[in-house]
Length: 203
Image (cartoon, rainbow, N blue to C red; front, side):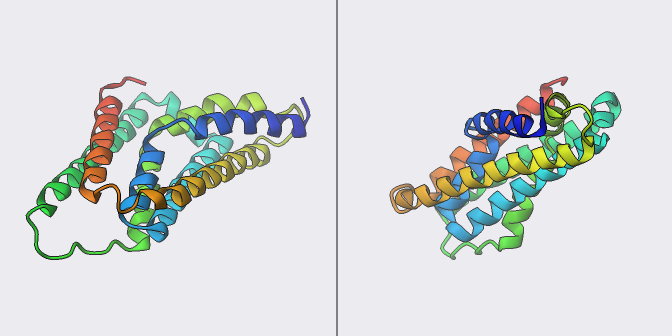
């Protein structure tokens, strides 16, 4: 398998995984519907940055070391689960109090929404485990594992950004039709569910 074939094959797999509904998609969709395009793109960029960091880490073996270390994986898994549950509970509680609040909610900054996407991705060890399991299969013999691994991570990242862009642009039609608090409750519930599942999983 040459480099071109490897990139194209990985791109097909990456595209299928990208369009599969998941936590990242829920976060970006929630930002697009409740906060607008700017925060949604910032969230998407944060998610993409996190994925790129995981991909680069896998390429240099950091994620492989983490996967092999039961203690390291457990620490990251528990931290990630706690963060997702906290973030989800905060969204649900904020939606509940919004019904009785009279003051306008504080407008989120682009940096805060970027950080939310970044942390959600970085604190999910299953993303790193995915790259560790998949990337080696697409690195041709004789090629630099680091360079090819980063290239494949960039391909996956680009697919994610394109997918999120489609979601953000399409979500404009939903604004005004869906109440923000129900979006927060739904996304918060997804986050709590993912957090509980991650916290209870062994690997």
